Length: 338
Image (tube, rainbow, N blue to C red):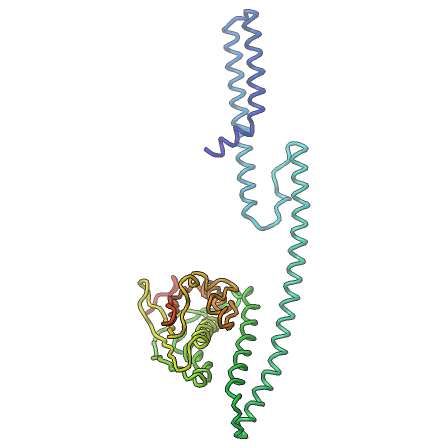
């Protein structure tokens, strides 16, 4: 109906002109006493011709509209396949579209080249920064081997570990664009992923004297092991970051929203209620991040993007002063546990 109304609005001038011309002939015929049967026959022919015109034009109008609708949804160049021009103005519009199309392609090409250059630069930087980090590890190890109990040694280890985490986050961020082609789903033990993540942060647990409550979950999931491991590592990193010395982190399975979920819980400082809806936004740090200057606003954003691409779900419950619970729902539609 909307299309029909739009058509009549578009053809108002032509139909009005046609109807006005017919009206003039009727008035003239009436004034000169032309036979009514002849006039009726002429009117019938005119109406039939007008109806044929309307049907033909509406069909052409609808075909053109549907074609343009298809082009609007397409990201490909479409100016070469536009409907045939019926007048000079339509030709002018199509030529303008062609100019815009070429300009857009040119801008896309420039953006792609700049993006690739930037990606190459950061990729090179990440690999270069790993060399001094490795050297610092060796120096710290040599200090430990010589039994030199420096009071700053603990802090140096923690800061070095943070540096490694930030470097890894940069690499993950760079790989996000091509992540879909890198995904490799397979049945994997959830305990294997969790143990690898916990092992990676074992030194942080010890240095911060944080207790870990973890019992094997004994579950097999269909997922990408590498990417899910990054997510669990990032969540553990946040839990350690915002849990005070002597606190506790718990890992378990729990029924939530009618599904079995992996839960990583801490009894840290928690997240304010007004910040919770935005924790997965890129660059959002929230009150805690701004107050403690510990948050980059990238970690949870990456977790959400990765979980979405893998077909999993992630959400967070938290209460200020009591802690945070991160839920990971790892089921997939094509996955039926045996």
